[in-house]
Amino acid sequence: MAGGGFTTDTVGKERANLYKGRVTPYVIIACIVAAIGGSLFGYDIGISGGVTSMDDFLEEFFPEVFMQKKHAHENNYCKYDSQSLAAFTSSLYIAGLVASLVASPITRKYGRRMSIIAGGVSFLIGSILNAAAISLAMLIFGRVMLGIGIGFGNQAIPLYLSEMAPTHLRGGLNMMFQMATTLGIFAANMVNFGTQNIRPWGWRLSLGLAAVPALLMMIGGVFLPDTPNSLIERGLKEKGRKLLEKIRGTTEVDAEFDDMVEASELANSIKHPFRNILEKRYRPELVMAIVMPTSQILTGINSILFYAPVLFQSMGFGSHASLYSSALTGGVLACSTFLSIATVDRLGRRVLLISGGIQMIICQVIVAIILGIKFGDNQALSRGYSILVVVVVCLFVVAFGWSWGPLGWTIPSEIFPLEIRSAGQSITVAVNLLFTFIIAQAFLTLLCALKFGIFLFFASWIVIMTVFVMLFLPETKGIPIEEMAFMWQKHWFWKLILPQGEL
Image (cartoon, rainbow, N blue to C red; front, side):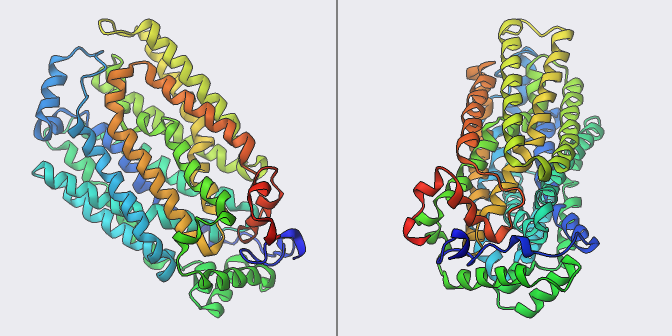
């Protein structure tokens, strides 16, 4: 076929240069409303660490940790080492993992919009249960409902953003999800600021305010249109074309519409997308669906954001100082995401991932050296070194915020052909939440066992994934979402893996 593409697993020819349209206010508003769902994920990440460092919360649900904390030195790495406390944080993510897999057929059959609404409803129920919790079982059940909401939201929203955005601005608009996530983290840190001194129910307010982004996501989902891709895949071609003309601001959408129709015809011929994604012709997409989210978590960022107050207290910061420091890192993360939005469609994905990876490695090593030399079981960091640790952690967060943070979601959501798109995104979310669960459950134990070596542990993973990007990730900037398959055929490595008989 023309363009060197597949005859059996992609659109027939490359038509990117024929795509017409502009960025319309309609698509901007739709993307902003959809991206609000990212704030659910961010709010939970930010709120969990603050709540688990509040004495009233620990005394009510984790009395053994409360007593351990009271009898430990401020600089003891192991004072928060509790599997039950880790389970409070990590139970959400195992629930989200299962929910993301369930969400795939729902997203495919009923559209991206329905999964967004379902995620908002589940998260709202979970936030109410957490705020009203009177037992550990009720608390954990609330976390499971939050996890189901995150599983549905994280599965559908990145797909929605990628499909609504015009090709030349897809990276920036898709990153609205990560921007909402970082703003959710920052908002959670601010809430923890305000509730830490409200005794004894401040933690209830922190957990209950998760209902706000859940309501916004649920109500926003009611008014959102579905994507043209999803409408066409479900047989609503005329409705899909009218929406495409509306979001592109032109009636000259024949080329893009034809790509969507061809992709939808192939998608509807495939009844078992999870089985099909295992075929050799989808090997690059499957590898990226696993490697990108795994690498994002193995940067160590979630551990820093989950447990920032706990981590800084373990380093010798006082209780209030630790919350100030974690709020600072949350604010820095939110600001750095804007940098990524401004540059991703100009510099490309690879440049940001590689430069961010190098900076994160340097920062992790510096923190490990400082803690290894100046911090031990019977000594606290001096004020000067404490400030230096916070500064370096912030530089680490900045690098993550412009690279692996947003791009860990953006790249997987834009590379899947329509026939495996929902399945591929479900795998991405499931892998992300699986490793989030593993790291969340193991981090406090790892911190106790490895001490400052925890930072070297994560730095070593960043080295591996930066090399992976250099060798195996092609640039996706400017490539239409329905023509990504041509990109793999031109890559030095993947063209050797893909079946040659289908060229």
